[in-house]
Length: 304
Image 1 (cartoon, rainbow, N blue to C red):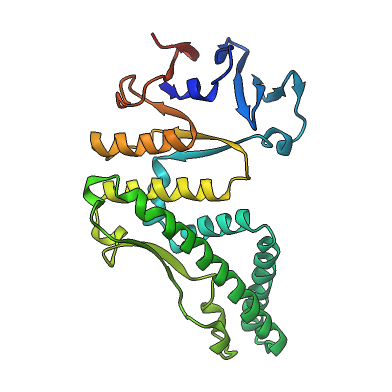
Image 2 (image 1 turned 135 degrees about the horizontal axis):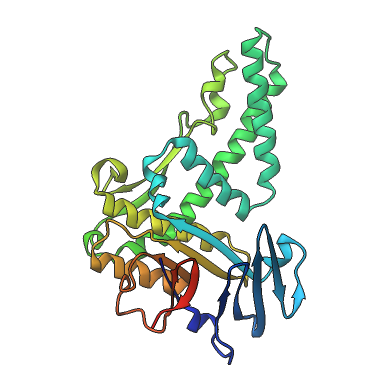
């Protein structure tokens, strides 16, 4: 397994090098990064069943403290599930972004889930559902749908310029669409089957020239769009001023050399990337200044 990382830009304006040490019992991984014109030293010490994170030689004791300046997200080949998995999976991905962007929505989602559970139990036990619960379902559900629309509209504004970097999509019109079961929750009467409609069963998808991508386009095109969508969601929801790391677990399968170079260049320009792959030459020549490491017999070694 090889690791390719743009640590040279990650460690710019510093004199120390990336540090990766490994022996039979422990490992130390770390380096320096720049955040808001300040240079920080960050090291992670790993031992059996334990890990410690040090910043400027001080132990960081909470998860929040460790992510104040540095955030991290993971992208693998499974990212394509965004198009081929269930609507529940897509709803979850979208709702995570909505709640990161607007933390007040976390309470709204919890309250909506309780109302839906109350509705299901009322149907199960043959109880009447009070009108106040129905009104609550309408109000909370409408808030969730509106926030989802806001997030998808933001993604729409960013995705169209990006896809033009890829030859197959250069002259296409791409749109992210919300696909509700019903368009207006306030028009729905209180019926026993009401729990079958609402934001908890809605879906969303990406269309190219009015055709649903997952049904009419190749897996390569789906993979490109999935990577762009996930990376945009990360960018749009990361805290202001946070330096962000992206851990890439060989997510570029099914892409030809040209498309792979384009998507890698885009990710390298937006994030500090660590890319794990099985081939030492599995990166375009357009990505210079990469620190390279490989694993041999359980040890991490610099690639020469």
